[in-house]
Image: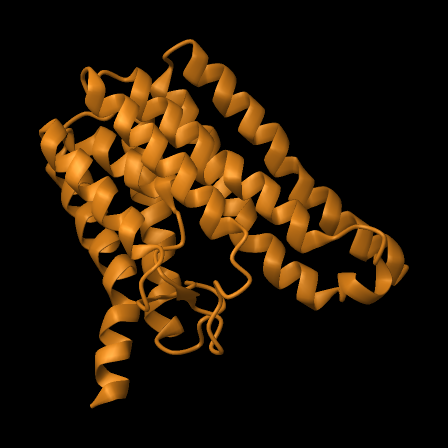
Length: 229
């Protein structure tokens, strides 16, 4: 295959995330939360695959007209931030003023984080919490904790976006990737399963999401502690 066609195809694959974002938003507008999250899980999978493909087919050299990084950030803001914030607000999990505070915190902090030119570390991890509100929202839908817990978690993670804390990229962070990548695939499986069964309180799903989420959010912090020692 012509390398230019292959590289362009990767951009088109990345752009498909915008379609999944629209399908997710339409489902959210109709309060079809399970369907919304299923589309977000598909978009999440696309986002995990397109990066390695872009490097494999050298899109910067063979399809330089399109900025893959910018395209990825646009779609990520929709699927990682905007739609999950809308879902938390409209779902009833956050009554009254707490819903307004939550969407303001998420959208404002994430807008600033996504334009941070220093968001990546030398080992391709993230400086600060990388704004994965889609993952946070899905776990909140599955567990359905008290609204104070959700508000506190959102506030804490938003502050953590701008602190010198390390969060791994499950694909690009080489350290512990042999564990991080399978655990990410497990998280996607549990997330899809949870949305598929309309967030029923199956203990296997709840424990699976909880354990895999705790690993993904804490692995980089443990790597920091180990490095300092």
